[in-house]
Image (cartoon, rainbow, N blue to C red; front, side, top):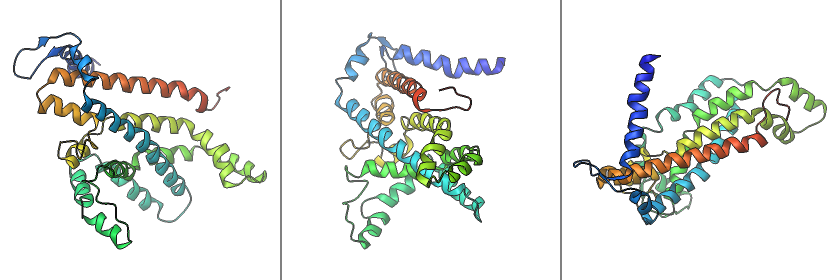
Amino acid sequence: MAPWLAGFFALTVGPMIASLYLSFTDYDLFGAPEFIGAENYTRIFADPQFLQSVKVTATYVLLGTPIKLAAALGVAMLLNAKRKGLGFYRSAFYAPSLVAASVSIAIVWKAMFIDDGVVDRSLRIFGIELGGWVGNQNMTMPMFILLAVWAFGGPMVIFLAGLKQVPAELYEAADVDGAGRIRKFRNITLPMLSPVIFFNLLMETIGSFQVFNSAFIISGGTGGPAGSTLFYTLYLYIRGFGDFRMGYASAMAWLLVIAVGLVTILLFRSSKSWVHYQGDAR
């Protein structure tokens, strides 16, 4: 326990306290920090690039997270049936999630979706002309969402484990009542799976706020074109290590912590109305 506490305070609590102090200073990484009060926080909200990064990240969280979870749940339900070769299919669908956050996959993804790349030319065969992906500010967000959805293996495995826990007797009783697939999904599967859905929603939402590798690689570290890939963490990196404004970047980091904390609290409060646990009296 003592080594864990030492590591916790040295590697987590200590840097957080230092970051909080730096957020109230003008610090360029080379000189001594100069205390400037809340100036960094007031400047942030007048910064158009900061507001753009918030817009890009919020769009990604609100669109990418539910689409990814829907894909994960749909495939998990297909893989929950008794069929031959399920082990292979489960491994095949899970594999992308192991490498999706890596730099190499971001490079491969950029090569595939670059303007006039493999994806562009393949779509052109079917008469679909989108005007490029990486260089088209209207298509960069769909590309990032596709990358997120492609890596649905993690939540899929958790959904699959949750589906195994749904009592078969409930479906048998529904069959006796003549319930169809949609009714059984709405009245049995979703309520029984709601704790798992809540867990996946919470984890994926927090993860979506922290997208960095793919945004950095695909945009070349610029957030372009036209700020369409300027994710929050990428802009924080640019301010901290590109412009050497570590005090400003620290203030951004703390605003991100507060935003994620508020979203987490909202999710927990909303869960009281739609998450059902076994033995719950609600």
